[in-house]
Length: 332
Ligand SMILES: Nc1nc2c(ncn2[C@@H]2O[C@H](COP(=O)(O)OP(=O)(O)OP(=O)(O)O)[C@@H](O)[C@H]2O)c(=O)[nH]1
Ligand SMILES: [Mg+2]
Image (cartoon, rainbow, N blue to C red; front, top):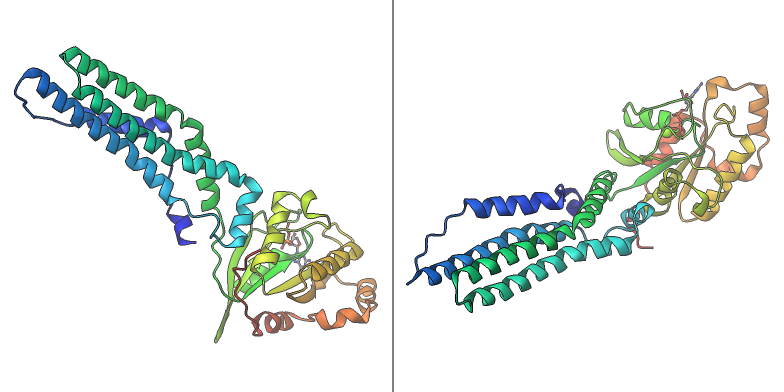
């Protein structure tokens, strides 16, 4: 993951071109040959070499700053795939290297042309032609640079997840996930009365005297197929699938969240089946709003749910701190 955080800003193609040409114009080449033609040739060769280095260095630096997408933890790979086509991404990254090679080829070729020139003005002609080639190589990178900068910004926004015991808080939108996450992690995340307030996975830590566990607040997910979900919901699924040892599933039986009790129970069932390798806990939120009807609804639940139900916030703490630890960076 470290590498992801070290990608520097990618500027417009013209920035690199201007910087290189600026440096070239400030560079002094005081080499005197045995005559004017030879002096001109030596200086032209030095200029080509200088520009080649100035132009290929940033290309190779950007190329090497991107992490290898195949060795990236599966969670991040899939997060990337939500927004980008990996084939395009690879093409863009390798075109940086391709352009650097092209620049080196042209440089070699033009140094040859300069060497075989018989007149001063022919040397000048080759040199300006070379400059033109360099500009056109860079101009072709315009969209590549823009797309890579978008990719970099997206990668930078990834949550930083530690490889440690992890519990995800899941449920339909607006059921009170972030409220409980805030209490457990002693933080003050954004909480609102409308669905899809949480748009990104939030990372926090529950700490008591001898224990620290990682908690992920996930965006609300609706009960629909992965393909039909929006990218916000999909992140919740990725967090459950790739990062979680346990899932604290919240249900708002008051239905103030906007979803029926039955629909919420259906999603719980679905998640439990889909992520059968995780340990599940079920907690009913908004207890201050309970009435007899709601209490009855909960009490009438099938007995099979008893083993999942956490009755109090103390039960939640027990659930999240009990030991069960697997490496989280699983491959697909
Ligand atoms: N009365 C009452 N309201 C609560 C409780 N917990 C949360 N709420 C309210 O429920 C609404 C949603 O709370 P959030 O914590 O943002 O819910 P969420 O599940 O994170 O919502 P999304 O991020 O949109 O999925 C807010 O208006 C909260 O104030 C509770 O225990 N009692
Ligand atoms: Mg939330």
